[in-house]
Image 1 (cartoon, helix red, strand yellow):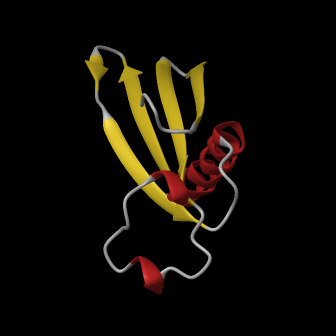
Image 2: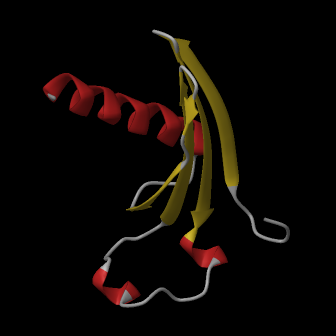
Length: 93
C-alpha cells in the first residue's frame, strides 16, 4: 500500500492442531476515493481489511473480510476486537 497512510498488524495463533495467520490493514477514509453512498455512513472514519489464513491438519484456506467503522484506525486494536468477536460467535455454535 505504497503512498497510502495506513495501520498494519500481523498475528499468528496456534492451538488444537490449528494455526491461523491474520493480517489487518486499516485505512483512514481520507486516504481513499469516495465510496459508493459514502454519505449514508455517518461518522465513517476507517476501512479495515482482515486476511485470515487458517491451517488445520493438511488443509489451508484463505478468507478476506472487510469492515467499515467510525473508530480511529488502529490495526492492532482491531485485530484484538475482531478476534474477540469471532471467539464469541464460535462459542455460540
